[in-house]
Image 1: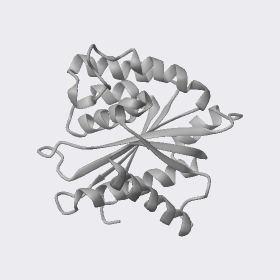
Image 2 (image 1 turned 180 degrees about the horizontal axis):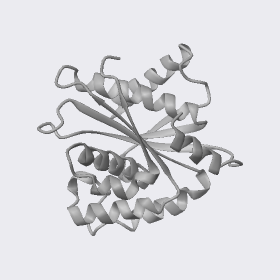
Image 3 (image 1 turned 180 degrees about the vertical axis):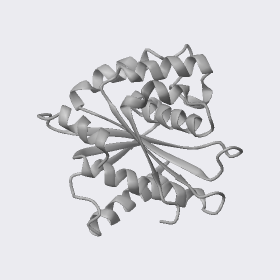
Image 4 (image 1 turned 60 degrees about the vertical axis):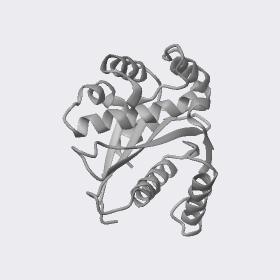
Amino acid sequence: MSEKLEMAIERKEGAQMYMAWGDESGSSERLDPGTYMMAAAMGEPDAVTHLRDAMRSLLLKGQRKVHWHDESSDRRLKVVDAIADMPIEGFVVVRSSGEVDRIERRRRKCLEALFRELDSLGCTHVMLESRGPADDKRDRQMMQHMRKSKELASGLHLSHEPGPKDPMLWIPDVLCGAVGQARVGESKYLDRISSRVTVRVIDSET
């Protein structure tokens, strides 16, 4: 368990459960080829209504969701500043394998590491942004396999929702974007939320 996230759990001692919302992204194919990221924002259920309202308040007219790649630099700064004040803890798994691995393998390895971390932190439910019925089914099958192989306890459950439907899913998208920008030399976004985010780089050989 990372020290920062362990301290976060200690601060939340006495809460009944923890929930997480996850999303994914690649990095710059030109500057950071073969890099994949899975992020989760973890928080207490009692805070979710407030967090959703706060994220919705960031929408521009006509926007269905806050999406990192659609935002200007000034907008990105506004969004990360808002997240910096939110009662969440972020965790980002990063895996770089050059151009050797297929995207699905990169994603699977990151997601396995993310599930293990959330499970170790006592998280009871993780919601991922839906990629469609077939891909969502593969995610559930992977989690079930990890349970059967004793890599996960039985307490972590998985669901999926479309990105525009739940504003909580916009937070991990931003976390991925901030980490991705930092990896290619633009750290101003990650610097503003660094106290809330733990980044774990995993071995590409696994």
